[in-house]
Length: 147
Length: 137
Image (cartoon, rainbow over all chains, first blue to last red):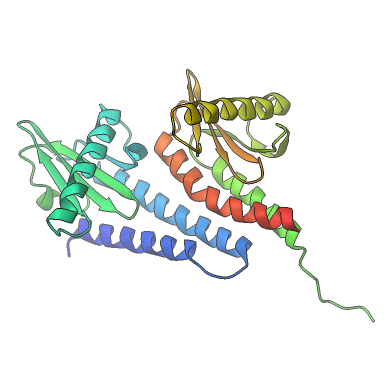
């Protein structure tokens, strides 16, 4: 498993921890609330940390995370950041239509390749991680190790 | 004979948790105030990092939310879950909790809207349970 896959696996574990903290049974709402809050903070902090690391990799132009098409975490300077959100929202919606009819299972990745740039969208728990790079960059290769 | 046993006051611990939730919301980048407003527009809990007229913010949040909820009903959108006011210097987000109580957040322009909205959406179910329990005690 290469560097980025390890990071995604760790994020997915944190997202699963958060989901299970939310579903905790029992009448002690104060403890459930505190536990869910702590796990959510751990997940979001990890998302921000990954965004900060990915954007430092040579070849990556921008990285951001979105929830329902709105920015949740971003690298320092991302041009057209709202446009990314709109594209992500539309693309995920279209993919989800196909997900059922083609029996794809839950959507994990979508990549849009343009003549100049490409945009990879990765589903991690409740958020979509978005990586933007020039078209010729081999994402699998550059993301295999940390900057 | 004195006892070392201390009985937990559920209302106090719920109140502490409500305060902890507001503190947590304040720790998000760009959030400058987090308040709970009752159905009459009075602020019952608040954390803020600037001087704010609590009476004015409480009353305005209730008025704005009420107007937005009315507009939603007029277009057949049924219940209103969140109202976001985008202003030149930031956002005001308000969300209903329980029994007319509302959670209101004031942010600066640099706040990441998705981050703040995500935290609000995830926090509200817990706050609803806390308030149900709090009001029942």
